[in-house]
Image (tube, rainbow, N blue to C red; front, side):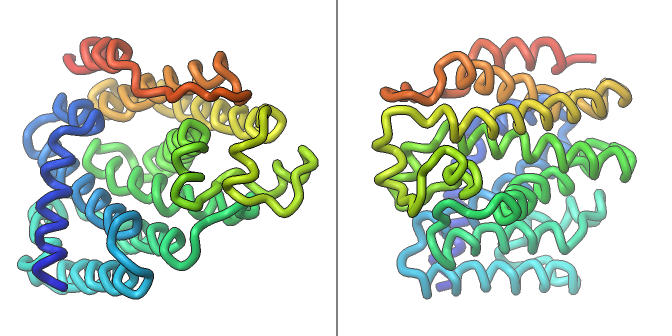
Length: 279
């Protein structure tokens, strides 16, 4: 198991280097860039376990191994799966609970495929898989605690909800449906299954309220960033601009079939990097 997880962790690092997220983080000074790379690699590794790690028992065992690795890291053992996080931890003082929250979020997908969760459950999921990552990241960016936590809350949810709305059809293909049960019931859809929901001709009534919720989080996140020095918010601003462009494409495309796949707009990402990548 450990050898397989070591290989998984290395694959996660390779994938991180090729991601648009890492390109956005490349603007940071080296120490901060390296710390963000390790955070992202950790997230990628545990996400791979949840999505590709075999049967349920194997996935749960893999996530538990990562929990023990985080515990060992905070106990002063710099070796093992979490070794890449040792230096960033000493420099930036991450909270152990945020790493464990990310793992808990992945376990929500493992325990049972998420299908039409309650709005409260969806919000908890977003907090664990997105806002917890933000709480780790804002320590690297150097934001004050209060503003950093608030930015993580709003931007994490904005990005995750945007992802959910973009990936409805892909998620259904692996048996998941993250659209909240309350929205489905309000649209007259009872006993929802991923296959049934994605085959409906028009999901606008379900998805528009969620799209507006994401917009409110983007607006709140941007308002917080407007109060901060430019050097502290360069990386999250780039992510906000890139995902804001995805949001606008979703808003324009709507949620009627056929739902054309929307990727990360490369020109928007490049423009954001050019605008915020330099002092």
